[in-house]
Length: 133
Image 1 (cartoon, rainbow, N blue to C red):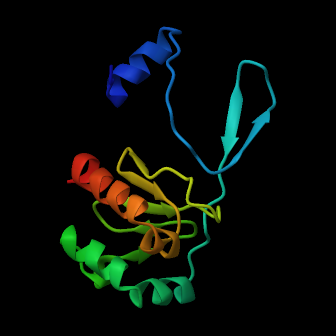
Image 2: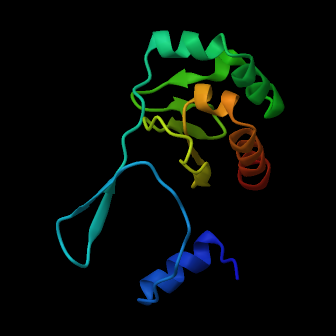
């Protein structure tokens, strides 16, 4: 049975834990047995990485599909602010990283990995259409 984010938050607040199958790039550090934090490394965004993205046709196609122009993309330290949502790119070099959305934040592997994998392209499109549009 699928639950939405609100239901998940309520169940978690009541102390009811749920199994979720999400593959997230990062390392798990245990500072406390009850409170495990997930450390995720995202690609730092610079002017050169942004210009590299602009050269990728898949990135241009994604922007056009959500009706965002290149001029609306704002460079932040570890993500791109696209107005409608923020896009974080995982620094993991494998394509096992799931693409998901949480609170208008899109998390995905790099555009290079997405462009090389039909599965990741499909997952990205489904996430955008179901969660962001």
